[in-house]
Amino acid sequence: MHRPVVRPDRGGPGAGHGVAAAGVARCGRAFRGARGAGDPAPQGRPADDRAPARRGRSTVIGPAHPGGSYRPQAELGGVPAEVRRLEIQAELSWAHEWRVVRDTAPAVAGAVLDAGCGTGAVTRRLRTELADPRTRLVGLDADERLLAVARAEAPAAGIDYVAGDLTEPPLPARSFDLVLARYVFQHLADPVGAARALAALLRPGGTLAVIDVDAGLWGCADPDLSALCADAYRALGTAQAADGGDRLVARRLPRILRRAGLTEVGVRPFAYTGDEVGGAAALAPQLSPERLLPLVERGALGLGTYARAMAAWERFVAADGFTLILGFAVVGRVPVP
Ligand SMILES: C[S@@+](CC[C@H](N)C(=O)[O-])C[C@H]1O[C@@H](n2cnc3c(N)ncnc32)[C@H](O)[C@@H]1O
Image 1 (cartoon, rainbow, N blue to C red):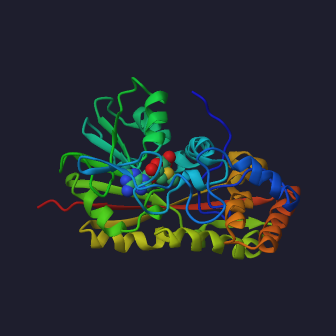
Image 2: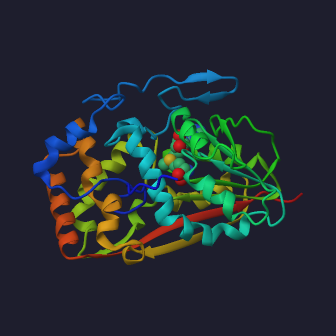
């Protein structure tokens, strides 16, 4: 399987995007490189961000999205870069995430849903990690472009991919033992409603496990990055919030899950260092501020602020900087009557 080196979506100052450090001098080139078919118009909403097509009860994506802040076509490099980014993100952090949620998976047969599965980068890994190969595994996503990649990557891997909006899932109630939602809730305008909809898919005693970012608790770096990049990444948070998303969602998840009726809600943090995944060079995709270039282009981030963030990143790389990356899984169970 193709495993390209791309850009993970995590809570770091980079919080999930950017390629190699390039400096402000490369801005123009990066803009040109990032703009292709289906990529954002210079101002406002992306050109292909149309109202989604409807199929039955579920909102399914033609080229656009049902709402919320997930718009891969608006990111640097567009959808193809996002496909690569999701793969490397899974490669970098899924093992650490799985370590803290694996006990919630059914030991014998059962059924697991990867809600907002995207390209199936984690769904495929789940297939090999679930203890019992008879366990039914379903991936649900609203974006047909990403689902097409998922289906092509694992045509006979024992995974059912379903198109649909997870807030109105086209799946039977009370039919899963575990529902996983990884880096999805940060994009949802109504996270409590989404958690309720996902909880309804669980059998009594089943678990909803949500893994997501908190941009305020992303980790730390030496030399320091966060102070120098804070203004730049605040612009990213503001832009995501304007689209209904929330880059501080991890700290809100315990209350979100409780309001959705889940019990035994618990936070399970996980951590890993840059050294474990290949050092500063390997983290370039994750931490470089280059992902913010589309914001500069849209006028949502000043060039000077971007330049300061990029200079801090370049100093970090030159110093072979150290990072500790933090992440959060929040789990809750459907009560047994
Ligand atoms: C950052 S990607 C994460 C993909 C995947 N969970 C992973 O970890 O590789 C967010 C995913 O959530 C999906 N998504 C966002 N809102 C959704 C919704 N309302 N219904 C279904 N999928 C949604 C997007 O289409 C996208 O595939």
